[in-house]
Structures are given as C-alpha cells and as structure tokens.
Image (tube, rainbow, N blue to C red; front, side, top):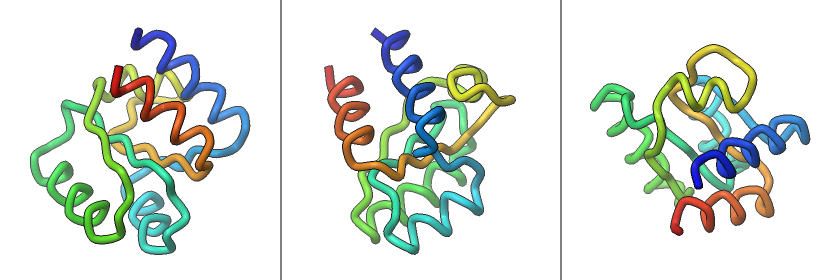
Length: 100
C-alpha cells in the first residue's frame, strides 16, 4: 500500500507539484498555495508541532507518515522531513491513499 503512495508521490515530483524543506513549505503554507503537507513520522516533536499548528491555522490538511529516508527516496532526494503538495488533484489522491 505504501509503495503505491511513494510511487504516486514520485509522480507528483515529476509533475513539479512538490515543495520540500522547512522554510519553503512554511512559506507556501502562509501563501495558501499548498493542498497537503506531509511530515515524516521520525521528525522531531518540535517540527511536528510547528507544522501541525501552521497547517491547522491555514486549514491545510497535514499527515504524519513514513520516515525521512522513505519520503526522500520517493522524491529522488536525500532524507526529507517535510513535503508540501501544491496541486489539489495530487493532494486528494494522496489523502485517499493515506486514509485507506
């Protein structure tokens, strides 16, 4: 199940609909240009709280899943703690995959 999620995340990257990095994702949340935020399960409690609070305030869905290595591998980069999805269609599909 998670293999399909990571594959679809890779597709979103190739489509140019993914933002990564703490500051970049925070900036995009504030601009209200993200449809989904994904935080690695092994992120620090402080990072999880920061993104939960921002996402809640700006009403952006947030999911905590996977780990740094698997999220980074899915998007073809080193480990990643935070990923933002800027396309509504990709976000809806990823959310439905995570809710299964």
